[in-house]
Image 1 (spheres, rainbow, N blue to C red):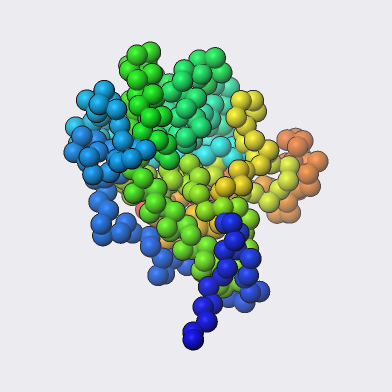
Image 2: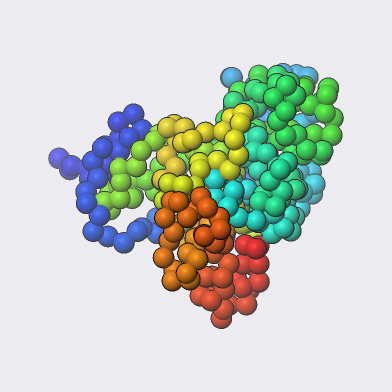
Length: 341
């Protein structure tokens, strides 16, 4: 009998991982590409695919169907999907001024209810799309976004992920009635499943090579889902405010108030996602504008917690200057890195 070397998963936790003795693994052998049975034209639900993709709890009300886009081509023509910025909710954005770089993109994607007002220098002013999980789909669909003063920009498109057909129906009806300028699209569960498949496969690979166990479940976060889908749709993709930082003085979210957290939801494994995003960037699938810390004495030593809180003694910057020096021989990469501000 052959004994499997795969790690054991118990309630989303990988319990057995050997000590790391290998370099951080790349994406070789990983399901980076969409499976053969999934077409990119099925990224969103439209009139040509809803019958085959939505059944059971995901089925739509007959009043919703006429409000769906005619086809994927109609969606693609509406947005063009040129250069895309995906703006996460990471607390590092509170310490940077990337607004101008973010707004320079053709499409700006934000996650759930992340605010813009009051943070324009940090996160930009423009919003093209918002990727919504089931919780925020329900909050917007019930009209609670008004009472809670949640952002809903003129002409924005809400991309619904991991939500039931009933919740999608309510959101479409609510926007059609009170905000007809807002478009609502549903991300196909097939794409979310493909994103999860890559995440789980890479987590197993990490564990087999001794990295882990990483805490959290296997449910892909809204931010990771947004990255997975948009990097397949856009000509170029740049990430802001995504990934983890080791400095304890950097808050989990760049904002406070409704829906903000001090730590991530344990149904997600953010360390796994962070490691996977780094691996995906190394294959040029997208670029990550990382938060860097420079000490005031220019020695390159990271500041302590007190100096990080005291902006007078700590200088924050992105990875722009670092990558400029490292990639100066590559004109194309150097030009693209302008998106890091």
